[in-house]
Length: 385
Ligand code: PMP
Image (cartoon, rainbow, N blue to C red; front, side, top):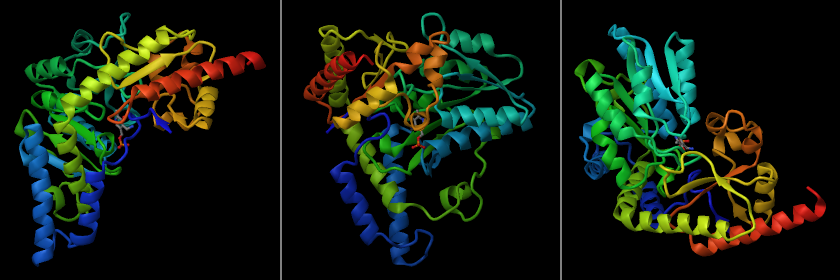
């Protein structure tokens, strides 16, 4: 099998599996119970929180475990928009138009609640710029939203610059950090009021993630999202998912340890793919912002190939790639991200695929992909497809 869809999810690391298994077996005590086995579990959760906080350079109290980035995105954005409006600051938010559905649909929900959203589309150079965010802001603006790295085309957004400016202007600033790997997450920390992360993108389990919440001012302190018990400082009630919290802490530690090495490998893989495509008879173009693109995500326009057909044919050969985000690939809808980049080029929306790489990707995987692409091209040609 050739797995080229790490942006959708990553396999669990063996060490993480071990941590989870141990916790499932041994740390079954309810962290809220006051007897020994409960207290022991509580201590383990605290040390996982401390370990993640230390790795990222944040205060442990600013870290909230969630069921993943979708929940963290919903929580942070809705809370900040509503609190700022209640404080009389305004009801306007500026957001990039290439956000993941968990951010985009949250903002659409807020729009229905009377908020005003200005979407920033890629400019003629395919860039989402600080200038565009500044120009779109008005006296009613309270916050900005921009993802660190786009999950479909790999565009790196200028989140550090956006955060610096947002802080000066007094706006809350939410970053979906899901596709930012290794040190990229750490770099962002001083410039965000909120940041969301999902463990299954860094070889941890699915269904667990966290929100970093650190407002510029106390008036914006986080409000509870799930009401009930006193877990997560009484802000997100419900018995903690101890095994996955411990597994996530382990996964983050290991992926930060290997960050430099992984980045170097991803850089090489990305270069190698482009070289091999250049040397082949395949016509291709890179979608999105190729000047500012993460090494682990590449979205290719392959004129003459239908993306849905290509996905099926690759699948039959046990090569797993994706057409845009996994969440939209299940349906036949065109990618809103490719539409945002190429509003007038519907052919491109239907002839593009996403490849994404991770710590197990090798040059041989890329070779197999190219061989298969050529085979599919020849086969389709002989059938007149
Ligand atoms: N944001 C981005 C950029 C993503 O890629 C994903 C996962 N596809 C999410 C948010 C949502 O993560 P989860 O489904 O784990 O909540």
